Amino acid sequence: MSTPAPAPAPRAAVHPIEQESFAVLRRRVDLSHLPALTRAVVERVVHASADLSYVDDLVTDEAALRRGQDALRAGAPVVADVQMVAAGITSRAAVCRVREARATPPDGDGRGGLTRSAAAVRLAFDEVGPGAVWVVGCAPTALFEILSRGVDPALVVGLPVGFVCAAESKLALRESALPAVSNVSEKGGSAVAAAALNALLYESPTGDDL
Image 1 (cartoon, rainbow, N blue to C red):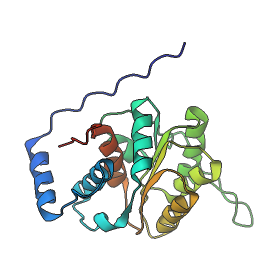
Image 2 (image 1 turned 45 degrees about the vertical axis):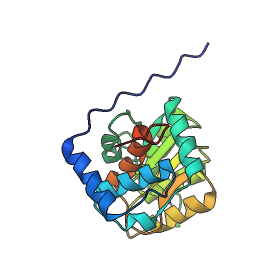
Image 3 (image 1 turned 120 degrees about the vertical axis):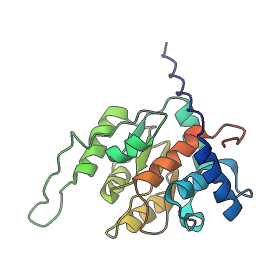
Image 4 (image 1 turned 90 degrees about the vertical axis):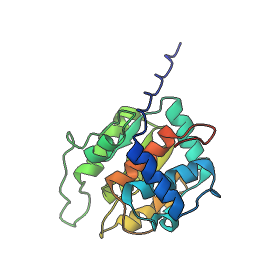
């Protein structure tokens, strides 16, 4: 008989500053037309970044978000590409193996090497297997490694930041047809990736968050 998944930790009471911050956000942009989980993700990313342009930059799919939330509630593991992402996920422990990972140099033709973040994806996949929720906020190489390994995720939150390959890695994620959250531009980062995941952890089945 399988062991039931542990219940998620209850969220701490919302601080009045956070409540007021969301009130300001909602006065500035009306997202009430969006489906519940899409709205939750967009609002939390905008809230975490104070950047309203994410409203048009994020690419989400309600069915994919629902699949991810269902997996989280069933106890699916969460994997983060870096410790800053893991630290930002406030109500669930995340697997992050970047400290144990070791980069490997490319061969003589400049191919075959791995960054630490990509190596960490390999270590984490060996640990969690398919069906996990993967959260990438820093390293495009981690996102490319997820795509190359066929990890069969419940959801990929792909929001790495940077001028080199960040936008390209997110485009590759969208073209892969995996269930995902991404954005079009080069911006992103640990805070917004964690915020997107937190939205799924916090949002109730009835769509009541804050």
